[in-house]
Length: 117
Image (cartoon, rainbow, N blue to C red; front, side, top):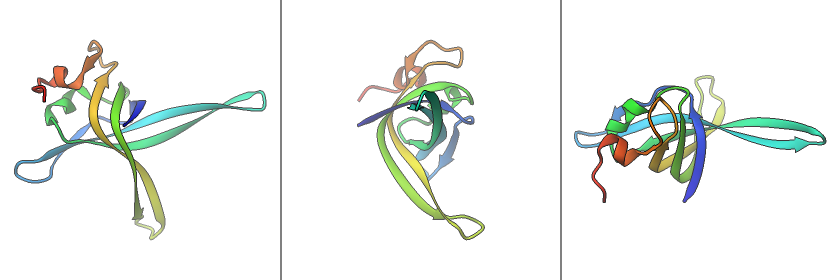
């Protein structure tokens, strides 16, 4: 299981996949810094996240908030509107920890009232 900490690029959105299934979708930017000679450089990597356990968490996931997600990294390939090949990093989220939005640091299950499994 991988762990990422990043900042939400927009408010989370809930999509209804079927009558009984909803998925919370959001994108996080993860900054990586490194030294190039004597100069520090930063690069942001963007992960398209999906969370299937509790759609109620979406109201707590707002643009600019810092979150830590636990889950699995993936990659999807697609063709753009301009018929160009492209790819995106994905992240299937198993657990979310909130670090901002005016709320205390909390586990998503506690914040959204999810029953423990």
